[in-house]
Image (cartoon, rainbow, N blue to C red; front, side, top):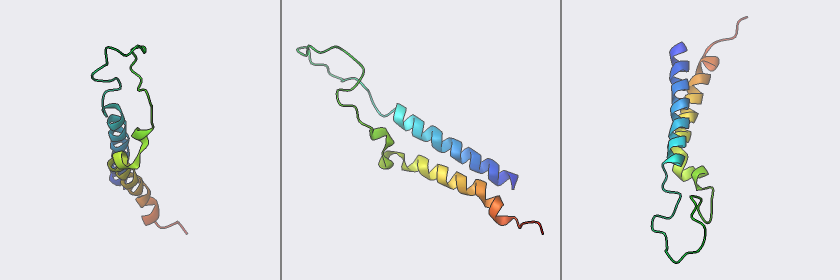
Amino acid sequence: MLSLRLIGALLILGGIVYMAAAAIYRGRMSDPRPNPEDTTDATLEPRHPDMGFLGLTANWPGLALVVVGSGLMLLPLVLTSPAP
């Protein structure tokens, strides 16, 4: 039963790392080809920030790993019978 919990914990950790890496390495935050006639300040922040990194379509593999890992961690609780 310990191995199920260990595998579940590793799957949860892997899912969280996957989702963090997907958000970090999504792409450049600054404009790749800045316009020389643009008079605004040069910044790394996008002009219209959005919360696209929280979307389900981009993070479903990481969420699936977390769900499967949680299920594996809870499985020993379901399989063991309560003491009389």
